[in-house]
Length: 509
Ligand code: MLC
Ligand code: AMP
Image (cartoon, rainbow, N blue to C red; front, side, top):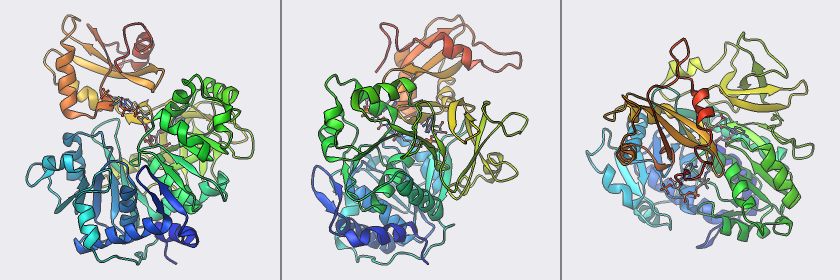
């Protein structure tokens, strides 16, 4: 049997080939249209000499064509590597060098950055795709001989690599197999009760697990239409809600909807399910949303290396401030520092199951460090597990900021800041931000504690890192607080500057 994820998706939606798949501003793409587009793009991939197992790096805006490109990669056995559209050429250069793709697809505007010889690694083929279906990829697809077969794969063959930054050093590529993705998708479509008539409101980006895998796969396995919005725009989302039944979002989606004074029960009357994840949804936001709309948001927990791990039930009690139970077929446990399993006590969350990734691309030592001897993946999240299995996340063992659902690793920003003249050392922290959950604060030690030129600091960060990672509040001190081991006490800094985005005059956004 062909275990290629595309074969599994195709088998499910092929009896609904005329059903709408992606509804965009420009047109309605039926399942047949998307499949045909994926065949043409597969033709371009094959004609370009891209072999199964070769990598294809993609940094393009959200569009139906970008979805077809992902499906074409699955179809031909090429490994799909999506990149955040906000990444700078410097960041993309690292990913190209690490992944060594046979093909890189970028926007026409960015092409000039990557043409021959400009970066450390130049892919053999660079094509372009814009947000309305233009670019050299589409020109070639128009002429290509369509590939209608689906490459025979096993569960262990790689489907995608998603880069996730590390607490130390550079980003690591999490290798995800066809089996990782299909096992998770088949579980979710069932667990969340996808049914005939469901319509998914899709306003997430498609370069992360949430919008790319969870949302797309669930809809496609159910042959559901997706109202495919280019991004989260609160007005467009509200306009689309009455035609949808399911929405998946990060907590910022829900707080932004709640900020709309006239957003009410009536607008959500048609909805079956609101799902939240990628960042903590406060119990307060959960309860306020229910009071306003009558819907209890279903919160679930996941990560790049594992897809979805736990979920509150579709039928059953959804408890605010918890992320529910291990999904069927997945084992979750909490271990204390002594390596003992604990219940109702805080420890590290560990996971084992068919959803767990195959390791970090070309980093066997890093991979080994993240697994226990009995094969559980150590998530780096801190949580509790009740005797009945219910999990609550209480913090992070890893030094990570989650802002609006995007992960930001302080180390990356600190490394850039530490090279600026006048900076003795820096500590980057996340503190409470009403819109993004956490906002980025840079605490900088200077020789006499005097402030430096913020514009200069911003320019230095801007040349290297994507805008969503930029510090939006700056604090200058004589020295960073350290414990007896010499480690910077970020907890103290987080407490001290927790009002950075709430006190008057601050905010930065
Ligand atoms: C945008 N900006 C952000 C930001 N998004 N800053 C911090 N954090 C973010 N998440 C900045 C931009 O750089 C810009 O800065 C300004 O905010 C406005 O940009 P925008 O493009 O207009 O922002 P907006 O459309 O409002 O985007 C906010 C958002 C978006 C929350 C809708 O970030 C989003 O869609 N987030 C979802 C991320 C996601 O899918 N995560 C899943 C990861 S998977 P300036 O200075 O230029 O004005 C995962 C596993 C799992 O975690 O469990 O799911
Ligand atoms: P990423 O590596 O981008 O996939 O982000 C995964 C991280 O997001 C997890 O390790 C958690 O820290 C966090 N996360 C995902 N879902 C939730 C949730 N429901 N509540 C709290 N944190 C979450």
